[in-house]
Image 1 (cartoon, rainbow, N blue to C red):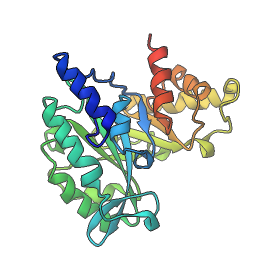
Image 2: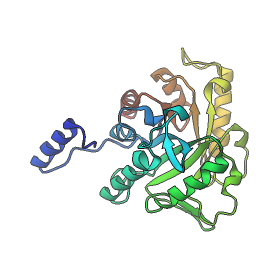
Image 3: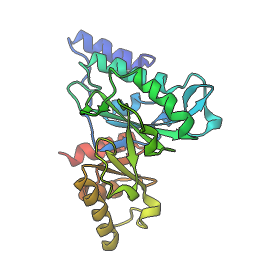
Image 4: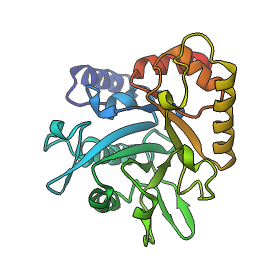
Amino acid sequence: MRYGSCTSVCLVALGCLAGRLPAQPQPLTNVHAHNDYEHTHPLFDALDHGFCSVEADIHLVDGQLLVAHHRSQVKPDRTLQSLYLEPLRQRARRNGGRVYPQGPEVVLLIDIKGRWQETYPVLREVLKQYSDIISTFNASGKTTNAVLAIVTGDRALEMFTGETVRYAAYDGDLTMLDSKESADLIPWISSNWTTTFKWRGSGTIPDPEREKLRSIVTKAHERGRRVRFWGSPDQPTFWRELLVEKVDLINTDDLAGAQKFLTQTQH
């Protein structure tokens, strides 16, 4: 809910008069809000549609992690904390420790723009400040919390070297399909659809490409990893094929369209 929205405030008032708050959307674990920060209300629009995965690009500027696609677009008030971490913390506190009441872990995919060598240490300290909601990792394994932070963009596994407590996981790529690293370290495999496949969503996927897709998904799942493709067609025909082939995450900018598609598909 956005308190700056008259519609939201009015709905809450009506809900209170009726003795209840408006119903929460059904959490959708197989969609990812690509470049979420470009929506009118970053994070909130995705949560309003039930998304359990959102993406934020970050730039290190004067010691602050600012959210924007390009460095030229940053604004000092649009920090990772103000747009994502703090709202997620407040929501988890209201909902008994989860982003959705009794809901699943929500993913915050953090895309590092620029050199990780400078940005990741700052990011780690920021995530540490939100350890009350962030899933963590140590020698004993994973402690699941409200939010799983996954680092993508400019990154390397070596950035975690020497950490006794880790506050983020790693977004893998297709070269890591056969990696023996744990799914706690690499829970996802991501790839650019347009450089991996030729099919663009018209008709059905050709058999050779279907077999290639199945092989990728099978290998990832054998290691306990999820699969996501970015740079992909963003429409129902394509989404339907992904679901058929057990791709775990639909990468989309169309929040309402994906929510409607999945709600209809699941019923």
